[in-house]
Image (cartoon, rainbow, N blue to C red; front, top):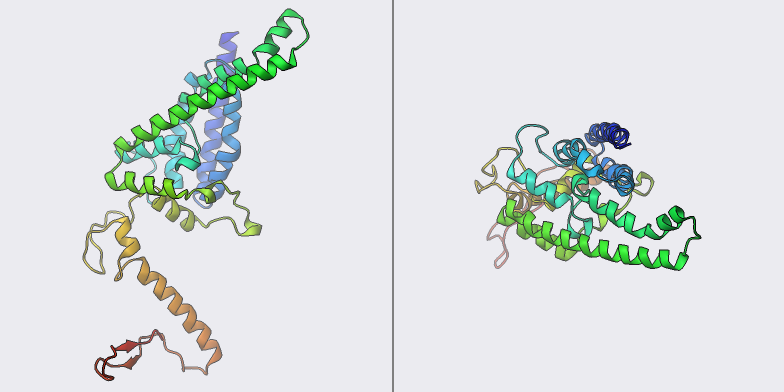
Length: 297
């Protein structure tokens, strides 16, 4: 019986790993939808099996490897997919196993949670099992009482595990990463990740929007191997890219708004009347007490 059960679980694990690979393929073009498919649907298949099959966690190594080495990198911007595991990879997988409200991705490690889930399920259904084996009527009140007790114990154990993972995950991250993650957690900046990405309500993010948000969320590296900012020559980092007034995000935002207004103005004014440049409206010192003034277009 055990041999047949192990063989069946192995086949299911292989099937799930293949499903995750298909999600990885979809993540290249639709990472937001791919994440929702795994977190809201696919992972519940192996979670159910873990609750009803003893020892299933020990056979889920292939599945966990696919999640760690393929799925998580596919959701991130500029991440390698394959190759040696880095310190950041270890930290990111530990954080991803936490709930979304604790700044994780809500994708636990099946190798770590399966045994605990099975014990909880067995304890919660103990009254039903005993009644069936003894040929007696099910005591509903006793079943409810044991179920509540099992769920309370499970919740307490999970909370302790989350607390332990949260403290240990910081050991493999840089000081900046830990601080940013802590601030984001305190500000509760995770509601968007739990929403279903419905296109009809414009709740789905584009690939760049999703990966940019994930990069900011987990303080990932931006700009490839770039070390210096082309705009000001300062040290390149995620925060510098967000804040640099010369070559960073503020300039990009300003230029985008400028081009939008210029295109709208060109629709209203005669041809050639609008030029996308910086016209000098007032020179320095032209009016006493007022600085120079340059327009956007």
